[in-house]
Image (cartoon, rainbow, N blue to C red):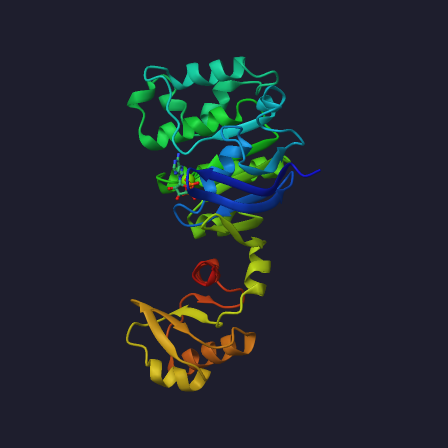
Length: 303
Ligand SMILES: Nc1ncnc2c1ncn2[C@@H]1O[C@H](COP(=O)(O)OP(=O)(O)O)[C@@H](O)[C@H]1O
Ligand SMILES: [Mg+2]
């Protein structure tokens, strides 16, 4: 049994089919990112796992349970962070975590310590409506974790957070995974998926267009290969194109992409040419294609 099992799921809103026959599984101890553009059906999918929405067809199981029919048995074992979580406006974080803990059969030993973990120690007595958006979001994450869930479902957990908040949330997600929790998160940010996810499910117009690890997705990609690198902005791209045997163009100030086979020998030629010319070579990215490129092709080529 997988921690999360989604089988031929269909979710409709009137005449709109938001999720159109999605099947996937997520295991304990993995982070699965549901990736897709706005309106792809990510939230609709995860809401069925949370029991907030009934499948119009197909089925979902979380820890072997039906999120609607077995709601009472499942709720203590699952942690949920909604895309927009609103709390009672004058509740304080310290009160909220204790309140939520009181409703769980096996809560964390120290709910207050959870506020430290999400970086809210200094805000633990600030009423909810006076917290910043990022602080409210980190509180929502703490509340999702207070019951020591086996499955955590996070809808765009880092959207709108500052760099520090993102790092914090990402490190918490990695810790959960290392503790054997199944983490299912949604994002439309490729960078997020690339940093966090063991596997990625790409949704587009309610359909699953790809599922696998980043390596698997890149290996299945049939798009053109490329090598990206940075160097002086006045680089002689024509000369370098001849050396590498493929077009080189600037993508931004001092950043370049060469549409050539992404092999070790290409990188050697590139580095050799820079050395010969006495130019500083910045970052070089070769090998696995960027998720961004793979994703664009998947979404553009999807029917
Ligand atoms: N409550 C709703 N009523 C009607 N249409 C909805 C509702 N929620 C979502 N949709 C539509 O379903 C599609 C998928 O939405 P959603 O699951 O929120 O996607 P995502 O989370 O990937 O942005 C979109 O076309 C959206 O407009
Ligand atoms: Mg959404």
